[in-house]
Length: 122
Image 1 (cartoon, rainbow, N blue to C red):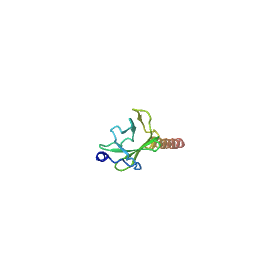
Image 2: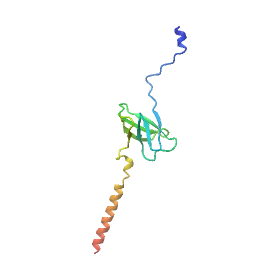
Image 3: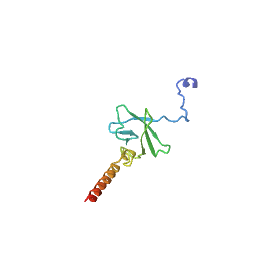
Image 4: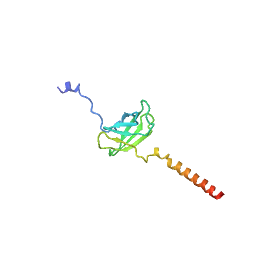
């Protein structure tokens, strides 16, 4: 009887093999769905057919999203324990550091220099 059952049995998977990263589609709204939440990726990340590899940390407190083709890091987030939440990128992320503050600081310095020059000429 055991020999007859053996025909239908499947080989058990190896436990030492690392799990393949899961892949998700990058949506038009620049979000990736993972574990019933939506994680934001930088603006302009979306193009039709783009996919992101999802790599949770070993402790599952952080998750990283990589481009499935180029393996470029798209975003990293703290893992959200809630369900149905939009996890936004932090406002101090690198994409915001091209900031208007530096340009504004230069403009203010130029205005101050020109006003000093005007007062000196009077």
